[in-house]
Length: 302
Image 1 (tube, one colour):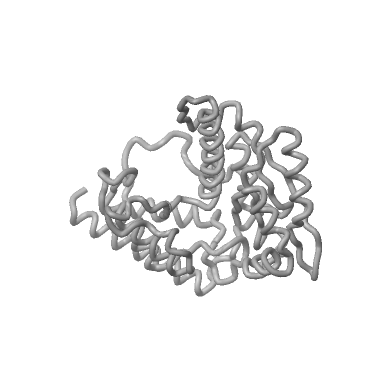
Image 2 (cartoon, one colour; image 1 turned 30 degrees about the vertical axis):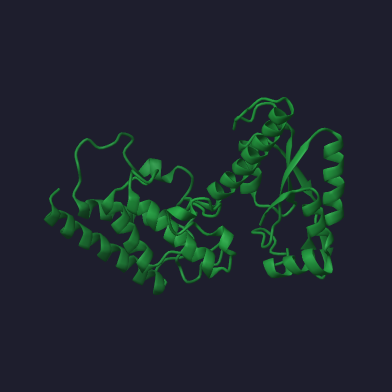
């Protein structure tokens, strides 16, 4: 396909997307599919069992999308869609995806695409400043700041973010323990392998935790301890005393606490404290939470 054909096809696709958004705003689609017609396996019955060997015209593909795909779509951008969470989709986001896909870069390292890494650094620093994080969370601005321990990475999904956190905390704990053991034995060990330590590690979660944190803990091959919330003022609070008792019991049994995960706005009940209320409860009205975390050197995930 030459550049002229890309331009023509791109315009048609943008017109298709624009029309879809107009139809959403005009509520021409129901929020949910018609489940009397859309049943599991409907698309397998509608499409060929074998991939086509010859290309189709774009007009045919767009027609297939209208006739086969859109009837089975839950319209997350519909004005009446109020489930789950916002998807951060907008016209700028759509056009940004077009540019990103058109460049076709791979940004797995700085040398693979310097601009990609540099833009990620700048964007994450913007985000950290926008939400008021301390300077220690920022990337260094030049090579002289290479000793800074701040920074971050943009992941593809929230679930992958949670998995990355759990694996990072597990790796950090393993390295700390093995290095201490090596120091005691007067020899050097540098490892990130879970080895014999992972099955002793414990993460503490609320009974309001999302399934993604439970899945991440399983993938990390470590243990999960559920702390039941206590009701207060029509809200559910993470109980500091229950957490302390669980940590004490686990340590007596030879386990290694590494992380506590709090739910500030559960998807299922919406009964836990907001982040601001959580801070108040933890650090002022109920300082036991903060003391438990500090005393036991637990990292916190919200």
